Image 1 (cartoon, helix red, strand yellow):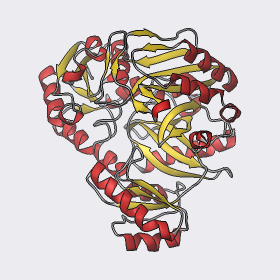
Image 2 (cartoon, rainbow, N blue to C red):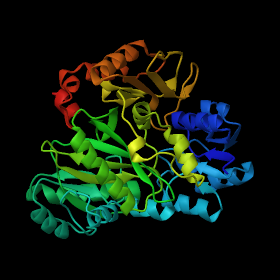
Image 3 (cartoon, rainbow, N blue to C red):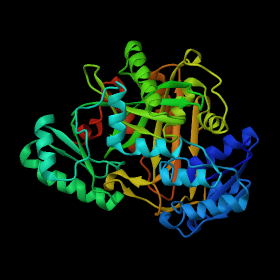
Length: 446
């Protein structure tokens, strides 16, 4: 039995995990950088260990420091949250070697799915629809040009080990290809230390639909419905909702079955997300699999009533899933807005500083996942997200109204935030109609 968990993360996700552990009677250990000495997660955990200076490379990304903190504190498991080391197969392997339970999939599965090219090949072999593209890694421009001709323009060039929109460029013609390829490759080398690329047909107006998966160690795999994550800026999600207004019950069943098939093909265990791109004609294609808990997991929790963090811990503890696919019911509609410390009017410039006054909304069907408090500092060293506001209502229209009401209550003084910008997005007729795609933010700029 897992008795003590070290949370190898910070901010709202660390707080979220600590709360789940407390409800399960599991002790917690927080880790923090020198910049996070007064952070909320350090106060809520049973113990807190400093793991290094402010830069994440010397603290939250230091495998040695985190493993040392785990051993010293006597924790028998690590929950990585999201970001940082959550999808690092070497870290998962190190945990395995040290006899520490890693709350996530096995290291070899993370490695297989972390390489987008290998993941794609795995899915194709399993009969999961994939976007037409290269089957082998591409390192040379000349090879890429030949493949792009075969696939058909426009094409998207992506870093094989990439993520977060880095190492990614679109080429609409042969004339554009060489420069796009070289730029993406240079970015990939700088961001990930790897210049391996792959090429796919570029879908111009898709929706980004992802399915939440839970899989235990006994071969049981279920999906918990979809999330629509099409409202994005520079490939970063801003608003997520469940279920998607774009899916009929027939299409939902078809995509859900493909997601389960994908997880089984990868030998997946624990919580994960299968990401698809969906075209207007209901054709959908596997994009990637995230081998961790997602930022947007609360919308799934609202509509299913299932606590995903607790399920992760139970699965890592060797327990079987306590429900089947038939037991899962989607009820109502949930929306999540990511509140960031940034100024949309100044090019979304980050806004670190000290929060001088704070009021967050409450009430039935309103949830706030956050680690901020009045007087706390927002560091320039980490991600700018300071809170997630999540609402639930009987249907999508009511959920939008509830989110608008909740956003109108948010007061965060001392820093700039994107709260007003999010309110405007929710008030946009195209968003309200549900007829949007991943280009929505770009179209309202002009």
